[in-house]
Length: 376
Ligand code: GLA
Image (tube, rainbow, N blue to C red):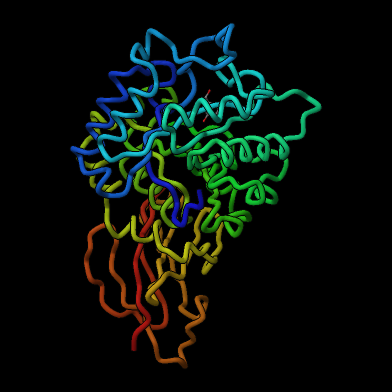
């Protein structure tokens, strides 16, 4: 499976962890359709860790779904998800146990890939806990990739080794469609800020076919569920979503979409932000301004149809900080006589043509984000 655009969907881990069930997955599938999330592009519904029994089946050696959580088996759940027009994602681990101590796929890769194909899975998140010490990480991801490529079903491999072993250098070669590059996110500004900043040098490796996954979004969690921490303000959630969009990161929702609030729903379905995330050229942004140790930056992403996306970030406590960026930094000198025709992606407002420089006041922990055309 070769994803041309950053994959979009929902994953159970951030909110639910082990509190997953047949009923909860079906209700989530319903919500993804009814609330317009599928229509906006969120097509994968991924069940993360804790879905299986604690031990493999003694006779077949297969991983088996937890009979209490999934009394109808996994194929029935997958059929329901598919009946809604969604794609179905499963989870396993390259080690002998998963991170939450359920059976991992080490030494069972081909059997498990067949099992996931029998379930009708379209996506496999593949974690990295309990890896035998002398096992080679890249080899384990190759092994599951080959197992998936021979299982008779198109299943995208979503690697999750948290950035170990310089993963960005070799993961594309395994055939994975996306790869986690950082440790786990929690629902706080500091967590998503640091995750984002840790990858500043690595976004150039993210491109169609294999995208840098900076973890499931905490947007809209409102400090409830498994990765609750200090929580975020609306401004901070918007910053998180803007960063993920600007850097072509997979958009995997982690909030409880059955109860998603209106502010969050509007944010995650914002058509201009999604246009930036899903732009077919999927280019990494460049730095148009770098200040205060990357706390106050301006990023510019070249997009298709001669559009640009422009993102101002202010990660400091200084509210309303005035940020100034000469268009010269983008490659538009004053002598060119050109300016940027800006649309504010949050309000949809046409801000007209700006010549010579952009100057905006940016809220603390906040952003300004624009789509621009070069005119003049
Ligand atoms: C790891 C992953 C998380 C989640 C948990 C499940 O920590 O990074 O995203 O899948 O395992 O146990």
